[in-house]
Image (tube, rainbow, N blue to C red):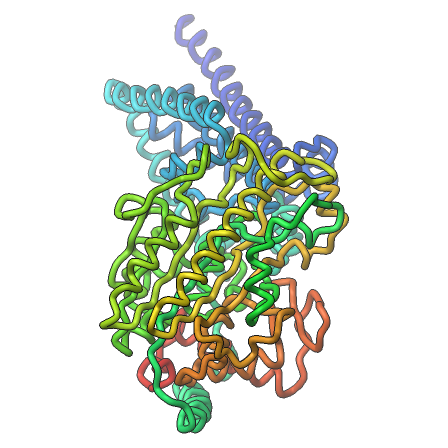
Amino acid sequence: MKKKLQLFKKKTIKYPLIMIGMILLVLISNLYLQWCQNELSLELVVKFAFSWHTEKFILGCTVLLIFLLFLCSLAGSLAFGSLLYIITIGILGFANYQKMFYRTEPIYPDDLKMITEFGLLREMIGTIPFIAILLIAAVGLFFFGRAVYKSRHLSKNWQIARLSSLVITIGLLFYISHFNDSSNVLRKAYDKTALWIPYSQKMNYYNTGFMGGFLYNLKVEAMNEPENYSKKTIEEITDKYTKKAQKINESLEEEQPNIIFVMSESFSDPQNLSGITVNKDPLKEYNAIAKTTYSGQMLSQNYGGGTANIEFEALTSFSMELFNAQLTTPYTMLIPKMETIPSIVSLLKNQEYQATAIHPYNTSMYKRKDVYNTFGFDRFISEDTMNYKEKIENNPYISDESAYQEVLDLLKDEKKPQFVHLVTMQTHMPYSDKYVTTDYSSKSQGNKKAIDSYMQDVAYSSEALKQFTTALNDVKRRTLVVFWGDHLPSIYSDEIKADNDEVTMHETEFLMYDNQQKLSAKNTHDALSSPFYFAPTLFEQSGMQMTGFYQLLTELEKQVPAFEKGFYYKDKQWSKTLKLNRTQEELYDDYRQIQYDIVSGESYSLKTEFFK
């Protein structure tokens, strides 16, 4: 009797202590995530958790506690479940800090799909931190797996308790994953005090905490249904613009020029930024081309990253601005669910073009292999299948010159017109230690070494582009090129960012080139555009047959030349919100109806001639 009483007292003390320990672990881990989110500011963390947003902090802790209990139940061990929890949260916080530092945006749930991109992750954070994280993760998974294996020896009562906990936590996590459902209780609890800002994910995370922002970006519909969406509405829209396009096409000759898209990694001009002076122009060769053809500035959705989103806009002519804020990466969140999607690829394939995608990197990045297959490319040439793989000095990436040579080889086939989409890698981060010497020197507030190396990078890129366009003059078939930088590099200090407005930090260079010099606006060198306008603009300026969809975009571009979430350019002015007159509103709504019809609706427009 005495032994039973002592055992009861031990359990009475033990289990509350365990629960207190788990709650403390969850509190500390949530504070850590918030600390990484707030750029290591302890003051902001304390104010968020215990003054400004305590309710949301507690809600986030509740979710983390459920996750911790799930891991402990799965492992059959509080110790090793907690160990894997600590490692997971530690790596997640570090990754979020790194992304905030380089791209000024937080980690999204969809980013976790990049966890197998070991090569890119190593290059981004450095070899030593990468190896350290890999070893820590491996040790954690080893002991966790060992605990799972040993858990089969637990007593019957513990197995029942463990299984019950596992079922309950899995059910709760599944329910939490539907955070964006209107009936979700957790979402309703957040909504009582949360201020969601769809156009700024950074502010979402700031206002609702790391956990709130992370939950907000769980799976959601690509777009909300616009008012008056119906088969009749779509038929009226497609009929209106198709008729306009057909009328224009009557005066145009049918022509099949080669078309080359070049998305140049991080290509931009440092001289556009206040606070930076250079000894000489790194874009000298680029500017020599730009001054002879249609060129200007492109509005990028992102700073320091988001390559695949810019590529998505350029190929499909659909805008990221129209998507729900939580749809952060269409390549991984949207296109895998689709059997087909209209794009410049499908349009040109219907005209007997040979369509080739080239990316001097691996095929798994952003699921490009699968995405390109959905687009309808005939082939995808990657770093493994390229004929030209030269690199410059210590640069780990295949040079632009090699990539262009790959394109030129494709153009030797004169039987079929070619559509080639090239995504370069030479100018990808990191930027230090690529070259033994550099011809360029900058004066700036911070990060001089990286800026100087970056300037050498874009100088080499400019020279390669000049050589490429010169070589195109010998190609017999008319050849059109759209060249653009996807975003600025993430090398600029906070002082430089503060000296420049947000729009400037989102503007890159672009140009359109015709080897026969026939573009209608070739004397315009200060254009402002968004990447989803590239294809319709090229078709209009080169005199190619227009589709109803491209006609709609051409009319919209004349009214609103560039826009992304939080950045709108119209009437020669920038604004953070989109205010439209009646004509502009009608065009914008027609565009939104069509995009919704394709990505979330019934695809009524695909049954018409609108995209052909």
